[in-house]
Image (tube, rainbow, N blue to C red):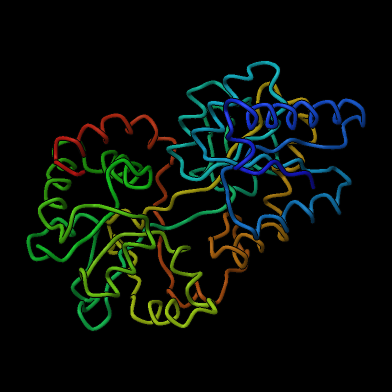
Length: 355
């Protein structure tokens, strides 16, 4: 597998930019020389376990995966600047908000695949245009400090705005796409007025100004900075098997609660990691074959056991750590509704004073 690292790829000027351009040009030239036996994957997924996916795909199909890594927004900008000459076949990223923004940029093409349509639930893919697909899910849950919060006190995302949690809640910033997508999803359920009231209640309950990533949130909860936070399960899952005793201790101190589970409630917000085939893909057939591979039992197992993500294909195994978090009901509302609500969600977060 060929790989252009983030450090090289994201050099946009000078020597680094020249190196990146040479790498990409070489990838495309090699493709032309060898025929339709490789694909060029632009991915913002930064997990070492994904290397096993690419190696296994190459072994099964003989199609080489040329991996170009970087931040999602930077890769998208690169694709747009490359235009019709882009060597990219596939764009993968995390969060439906990022995927929707890529779709709005017009980079994807429809993929009419019986395999993808049958294996991926309709709410986790683009049923309107068949341009993007979710291949793994990450559930955004309430995490709490054991011994400080009784899980019987917890119920919904909406209840986190209750004054009973004043000074006990911490969150990431409002500029984070995870929080923006969660707010956009709530906006589709609750409407603008209730969502803004919720956001203001969340801000009023902060124990500190928003800062850091998901890991920083539950680490701070474990340290006693606050009692509650909201984070994706896969971040915590990696702490369970860490060789670092401090991380294992943090894992043991944090409880996981799946919100909105009562009858008549929405179910937990379940986001995706996914993407699609570019409309300028040099190897469209190979790209579709790769996307179909990502729904295979082998690939779904890598997602579930290599990165503590939940698989999208029904009946796939999940990691014992995830099973230990308990069973839950996911929201079955289509993620296609999240993207169109993002702009309004950001405005609501700004008005609420969520930094």
